[in-house]
Image 1: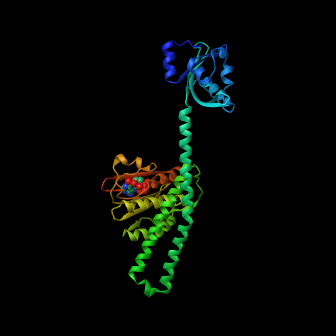
Image 2 (image 1 turned 180 degrees about the vertical axis):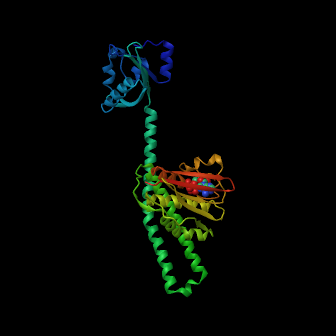
Length: 362
Ligand code: ADP
């Protein structure tokens, strides 16, 4: 039924691409041989009848198809749609159709609607298999990190209680340097493992799109002090001084748990990559925003790497000298973006890095 030349037909077949051309004045269609082949319709069956092709479109996709065609005609825009067809009642295939309308320049009336169609079944199946595999992986991470969270929290608490009891009841024993430093090391390791588990859990929630903000009234100064208190173990173990340059109260409506995670991630990085030098934490505000800055004097990040380190699993150190999963900044950026905020980075190689979290007050 096609008006295409033999050579063009051959090219279209080789590219598994069909063409279609609807005359809107009499509702007849012309199709290339390849399109009829994809639909499994003979020229005899077809006879330029649009309904023969439409009958093979998946019933759930027909309304979408009609809407997309109408939209392209009314808005004079490109029509593009992926939908399912049944070449035979037993076999379903995915196609991608793209086209556009031509109009009468004098009256503006739609005359023809023409385009191309591809059989995309293979790539759709691969895509589906891949997304299933990713889902399974994320589910595994989510379950594993959930399972690890509770025993870790218990262990953490127990270590704290144990340390407190020793201090209260056996202060003479506690003078033993080995016991004190052993317990502190234990606490530090627990703290680090908890951060890793939290990050894996958040990353799987983010890819599962189950991440939602739970906002409440938060006072930033108090929150950062609380974090630094908890962080003290890790900081002391690394013999790093952390200075907080602010005593003003800064109020806002934010997700407390999410923000704590962001600040903890930035602090952990400042310790990891900070070459044991002092770390400065600053909080401040403007009329519409609050900000938190974490500044280190460590290894720094080159300009080329500054954008990519916020992506999932991206790390600058490929040599494993400093361990990490490459998730902390990705999660932090996502949490801050969910607040309509942003994280800015100023950094220079060998000079240090300054991460600033900017949050709208409401
Ligand atoms: P991780 O630290 O687990 O690798 P992150 O997502 O927290 O993952 O950070 C991504 C990468 O960004 C790190 O691997 C590191 O290369 C770089 N980076 C992050 N923070 C700093 C910092 N304060 N100084 C230098 N490099 C940093």
